[in-house]
Image (tube, rainbow, N blue to C red):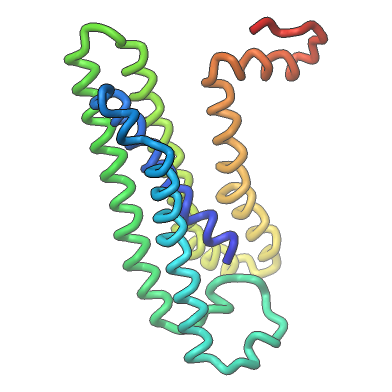
Length: 213
């Protein structure tokens, strides 16, 4: 459930970050009031509620429709094997469709608005281009996140074709879909930050001299 929670929260976090860039470019005078600390905590709370709802309802449906002995049965840790009721599948299909459509439309809307601001701006083009590139990066990350919703069907098909390599297939998909995107995000954002990039290059090149601020 923790893995499901973190996987589902990533697209909503990307949408929130894209909205933050949109507000900073299109509403610079109101940015401080719109993106205050209390509103940030409220957004985090809403994201937690939205991402916790599907796994909690999966667990509730399973408790209602399955015998309690299921929870004492040795079973492979896989979502379809544990949450077997058909209503869970249809519920998650509807939720994922609405959920990813909302995030994709949010990224598209913010990108178009930032592009229009870039065309109309006579000053501060660097910040506008940076915001545009940030939203594009969020779109790339969203595509990587969407793999997590496509993989179960593809993984099941490959395992049915190559049952002898089921563990290897699961391991490869786990690396590609869950580990690598989470590894790339901090690396990319770290290199995009000018001050942090100096320390990155220092430690990656194993240079001993200090980096001036």
